Length: 154
Length: 154
DNA sequence: AGTGAAACGACCGTAGA
DNA sequence: TCTACGGTCGTTTCACT
Image 1 (cartoon, each protein chain N blue to C red):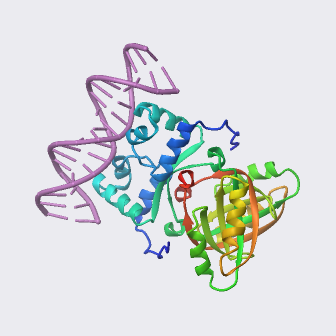
Image 2 (cartoon, rainbow over the protein chains, first blue to last red):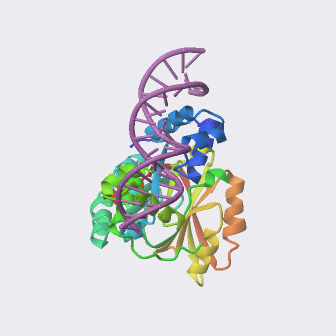
Image 3 (cartoon, helix red, strand yellow):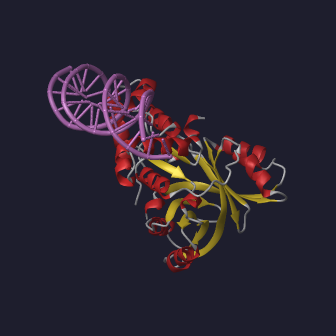
């Protein structure tokens, strides 16, 4: 689960990702026109970007629409090595998002659960059981109001 | 920006979205095989889902790789109508994610900025200036360790 | 809403620079 | 790493249900 910090992307790969942020299904031919490469070259680059995990092309929706009604952001305070705890938490399938932060918490995670039992099990049974997790604070989702991924094109 | 709470999706649309969570570029033909409809029908449904904003198909990456180095999660405490404040914050282009929550905050947002000046401007100049924003707490991102969107298929 | 068929365009492997 | 090209497969449109 360790995403090794990669070399900065070159301008063309950035442009390709920006195009895909606007429309993940845009054809390689169209992207090629914008960035000034051949279709095959664009395809190769996208392949590399996705294979290596640098980028992903995915369908995104509000989990609550698919029946996942117990979502939460959980702030975690860690005693000891933050990275070790982060890796452990990141390996849990219910954790959809994990960031290491500076401030009142060390780690913030988003968890996606179907119901209360699920959430309790994840929070008490799994997260708090992790060695090094000192304190947690849970923020239950009431509604997701915005999800945007096109900041690359601002 | 108001995402009106839609009727629950039927089983087939759920299945389609699950397929797209696994691979946003999966062909309609392949999806059609899985869900048991014709290609054309799948395409129509995907069109509707994306046009209506229920789902989006996008390229996703770690913003820090594109040179957006100042990201933060901001917890917001509101005095007054939370929804009004949420709408106002959601309209800001630097806000990539906004959820209404229960717990120590009323709203949590993720902001994507290029540099410190940008972030200061957004936080002090824009967010705190919003009528009804009582208190904010900022958690600066050090690293994004996990971003997953395939919870529909667990 | 969904199906089926035909024309069109996208995708993908390979060869060559 | 890129371009060029051809075979294959996916997409699109339309008439029909």
